[in-house]
Amino acid sequence: MNTETLQGIGLNDEQIRSVMAEYGKEINPLKQAQANAEQERDSLKSQLEDVNGQLSEAQKNSKKGSELQGQLKDLQKQFDDSKAKAEEQLQATKKDYEIAAALSKAGAKNDKAVKALLDTEKVNFDDNGKLIGLSEQLEAVKKDNDFLFADENESNPKPTITSKGNPNPDGGNGNKALADYSYQELVALKTDNPAQYQTLVEGDK
Image (cartoon, rainbow, N blue to C red; front, side, top):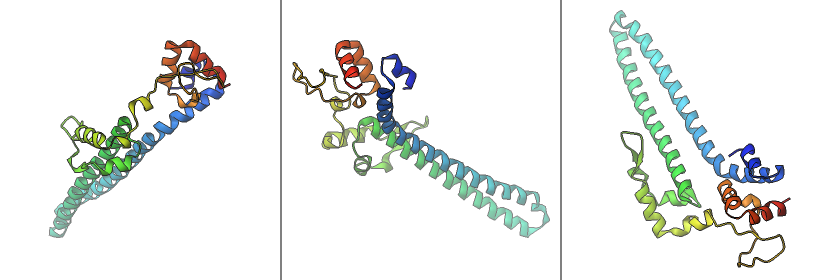
């Protein structure tokens, strides 16, 4: 979603800023999690390159004697251990990011609370890099603790808008602000009920 798209459905600058601010609240945490994962990946990669450089240097000097042979063996073990640890940490970071994204998609109100009910040790990646062992757990947790998740109707409600200050003849409260709507909801409202959409836009000016 971008400014040009919102302008295309008839929103003014102030309304666009409100919608983009709400959109940012949802997407920024996921962007930060991805940035953190990439930063950790780069740090671990640098560590591996450093150890690999020492290993290569020792290999060049390995013919100088038994002392260097021992150094080579130690460095080889250090490299193998560092590589295994780096791969393990990268997998853990990737898994945490994927789980966070899945919780957000499922409508979790509190990621920590929901994650505490999951057995993340049973969540892994298949040969294609796809997360397995999570969806079944999420369904069970959601069934037993539905209060931890946003209601589907709540997260994507049917827009019902009335003129500002007037009661809704259909029984809706008409109090939902423009910034409370997602981009998809605004497009749906404009398509399905242009009159209500126009009332919402004009009422927020």
